Length: 423
Image (tube, rainbow, N blue to C red):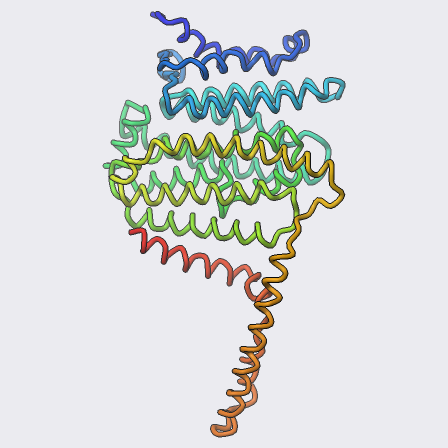
């Protein structure tokens, strides 16, 4: 029985965008994308906890809003409102209704995944969101856009296969698939490590977390403006939220697994920072910021896996982090687009970086020369063969650091050291 009218709004918030997705309906309504956000906005500003059981949906599910969920819901409403305004600004476009339908379907899945309180509902809604987002991502006829969309759909299918397997494992272990029960029971299951890796890899593929971030880079580089604005708040944020809800963190210590996760996260952070320093494309700045931020998230998950007590004390910070990341990325993209529209040069000024490498190269050359002189002195005494002189022909530091294998080796080593110190 429904006693609170806001319980009805929970259901309307999900059903209303789904109905508006019908072209025959939204083509007769002004501002359909904005109207679809009104129920979600009402839930976002309502301060109390709201819950609605739906026993006949997804084998029994529940929609709910509490303090943690409200952070993500506010982010969702803000981002979708901006994108709705962008889409509405082109009503004469021949693909306007095409975009609107996919926009509303993706919005339905996004809201449903945020409001769902158990695994089946989250999986179904997030799947609807992801495949609808693909429709927004491939908008246009550019070959780069289609190539980016093809890569995204491949990663998405792989992710759904892994997460479905994780869902089946959880369902075979317990009949109660709400998040707290699954975390508690799967932490004690005999295949908890396997479940952990299924979830972390699956949501890494969905969110574009390094080293499976290739589709994310392609989307930032070639995607349409509406899709690029949604990247941080839809696939990335929901992927991070899913990992937060599905992973059995805080119940049991996964020390070895957590160590690997921390190393991966640290490598992602340093890799993204290196690209931010050396990459000159202004358009790709949000992409590398996203890679670095998701790397921080992964490091925190790894530390929480190793130390459950630390995770339980600080878990409440994760939802604000995800919400802040989504809003920050949208603000950054809009600011860069505005900046590019008023400046001729779309690239960063890297004079400081160039000066740094110039001085580093000079210092390295002097050290090389000094070592070569000492080497030749030793050679005169020990008659070293000439082939060993090639050892002294070192590459310049900019070339040496720029090599993929060297960079990753350095980052992984540094990640191991930091993870050891954190332990």
